Amino acid sequence: MQLSHSIDFEQLVAALPGLVHWVDKNNVYLGCNELQALVLGLHSRNDIIGKKNRDLNHRTPEIYDNQNLDVMNKKTPQVFEELVTLSDGTYAMILSHKIPLFDTTGQVIGLLAVSFDTVIQKDIEKTAAKADKEDEELDSQIRILLVEDQIFTAEVTKIILSELNCEVDVANSAKMAMVQAKSKKFDLIFMDIGLPDLDGYATTQWIRHNSLSLNKRVPIIALTALADNQDKERCMESGMNAILIKPIYKNKALDILHAFIPRISDKAKVPIAANDETDWSVLSGKIIDLELGSQMFNGNVELTKKMISTLIVNLSTELTALESSYKAKDWEKMENIVHRLRGAISYCGTPRLQEACARLENHLRAGYRELAPLLYKQLLKEIDAVKHEYALLIG
Image (cartoon, rainbow, N blue to C red; front, side, top):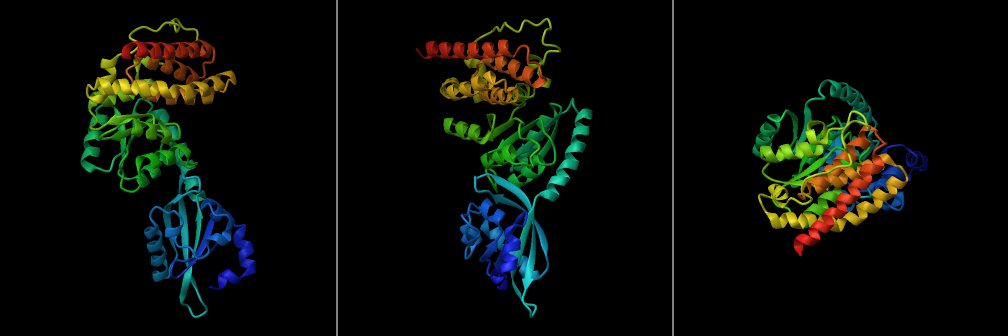
C-alpha cells in the first residue's frame, strides 16, 4: 500500500488527534499515529507494522476483523462503537469511523480507521444536564442499574426492586452497562460477575475510571451465586463495595438500599446542622452481631466470622490512607475511603462500626466539617472495639 511510503502522510498522521491506524486487505496493520501506539502500549508507531488484531491484546479480535472486512467488501465507510483495551488494562468505549482505501484502478487495498470519543462526550454532557434536572424531580425515587444477563432473573429482580420504590434499568451485557453508565446517573448498581462479553470486575473498573462514566462514585454491589474471600478481594480491588449472593430477596435488597443510599435510611440521615440536639458521641448496641451478619449468608455464622477476619486484616491499609487524608484535611478523599470501608463493613455483622462509618461519611458528604474530628475518633474507637471483641470471640 502506497500509504506507508508517503513521508508527508506519515508526518501528518503521527500528530493527528484521536486514534488512527490503517490495514491492508488482509487486516495486517501498516501504520498508526502516536496516540494509537500509546494506547496499545507500543514502544513506537513502527511496532504495529505487520501485526494483526489477535496480536494486540484485543479481547475479541474476530469482531474487529469482521468489521474491517465488511467495510472493505461493501466499499462504503461505516461507524462502529467499540470497546478498546488500554495499555494500563482499563477499557474505553469509542466511535470508530472506518473508511475503505482504493488504488488507482478502484480496487480496495485496505482500510483507514479514525476513532474519537468527542461525539460521545458531547452527547453525555447534554444527557448529564438533562439528568441533573430530572434528579431534582425524582429525588424521592431510587435509580438502580441492574446488570444481569439472565432474562428471567433480571425480570424477577426488577419486580422486587420496583416494589421498593426503585426505578430499574436493566443491562444484559457489559457493553450495555457501559452505555447506561455514561448516559444516566444511578443511586446504586447491581453488577453480575458472569457476563457474556466482559466480566463484572472489568466492567466495574471501566465505570470507576473511564472519563465518560457518570457513575464513578456510585455504590456497586456484586451479584454472584457463590463467593469466597478471593472473590471478595477481587470485587474490592475492581472498585465494588460489597457482594450479594443470588438470588436477591426483598429483605436483602432493602438491607443493601438502606446501607448504601443514606437518604432512605432512618439510621443514616444527615443532620440538619452540625450542632443539632443529637448526641453524636454516643453509639449503642452490639459491637459484633453474628446473627445479624449471618443473615447476609443464609445463616452461615462461620462465613460471617471469616468476613470479619478478612476485614480486620485489610484495615491497616485503609487506616493509613484515612489518617493521611484526615491530617491533610482532604475531606473528599476521606469521604471516598470511608465510603469504601463502609461497603466492606456492611457484610460483617458489626452494626456499631457500620453506624460510625455512616455518620462520618454522611457528614462529610453534606459538607459538615465541625464534627469530623469527633466522628473520625469515634470510627477509630469502634474499629479497636471490633478487633478486641473478635479476639475474645475466637479465643
